[in-house]
Amino acid sequence: MDVDTALTRPFDHVARRARLYERLDAEGIEVLFLPADQADFEYYLGIPRRAPSFGAIAYTNHWISGAFLAPGREPLLVLTRHFQEFDLPDGVEGDLVTATETDDGRAVFTAAFDRFPGTRVGVTSRTWAEVGVELARHRPGIDLIIADPVLAGIRAIKDDHEIALMRRAAHIADEVLREVTPLVVPGMTEIELASEVELRMRRHGSTGPSFDTGVWGMGPHLGRDASVRVSTDALTAGTGVSFDYGAIVRGYCSDFGRTVHIGEPSAEYERVHAIVMAAQEAARVAAVPGATGGQAHKAARAVIDDAGYGEGFRHRVGHCIGLDVHEHPFLSAEDNTPLRPGMLFTLEPSIFLPGRVGVRVEDVFLLTETGAESINTHPHDLLATGR
Image 1 (spheres, one colour):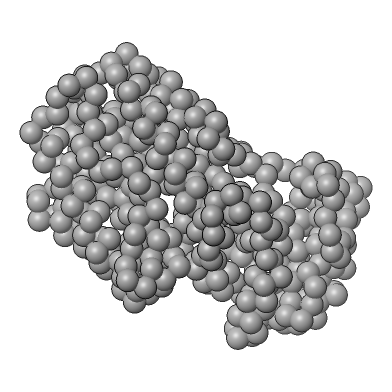
Image 2 (image 1 turned 120 degrees about the vertical axis):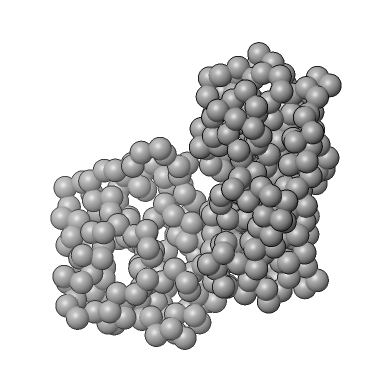
């Protein structure tokens, strides 16, 4: 599907729910509650999430907002007045129960639950605790089931519509780095550079950053670690400046990274850069249908360990991505989930050694029947300004 079509074509939420109901039947889950403002709610019901907030957004009865779903039934939306007024100004179709500020939220919620008989009830791991408490209190003896494996298993395989949107989000990330690379010079501050990244993503059509934008320098004269993702410090020569950011297109995320060196790179920087790129390629080769995320991680790990830099690679090599930046399965040592065509995931090896060197690379890859291909197009050449 071309991008222009993908940007305007409606999603087939009925078909998505049909797949969900098949899986719920197979797992014996009789009723499912999906909380609002999360990716599953958007994916299966078509109700967009609001922009993420650093702190919790709360109001009276907020915990009841969500939907009950069951095989063979139409969804029942349970939403507060606030949610409808400010998140759904154009209204919402379907069966709807509303709770005002003066309503007894527990009574509204349990009355909606009463319309869905059953003792095996699914919830997500990020459901408000009040939901689980009220479900169990109102219907003693029910079996509460974490439904994440069912939900994530469906969402992990992207269709052509989703892939086109994610290609667009990846393209935005590529273009922004091309634009900001000339700005990676001594005197520019990290926070100014991060602000440029976010501004330019929006100009290219992103609805915002898909997570906190990271821009940080590491090098022989800097004792800082990659845990400090952005600061007000000015960039200095002899530093490798790592980028970690992503765009959002119709709710779908990208996650991208490169490192740009200021001035002539040292021999160690050049060596580490080559090792990190080789590690990503090893993970890409290992990520074939039927292989596990753990195997891809180990392939990248082996390259870095064999080069003597294992202590500098301290995180997993990647994760699946879509409506959420981090989706299951993960590409990490403990994950034995088989990779399947249609999955999109990051491959993001790094070597971070405070006071010495820092290099990272990150692209999003689409798994096809024959292997993993990057949906990012930015080259992997060593980037250096002011040489």
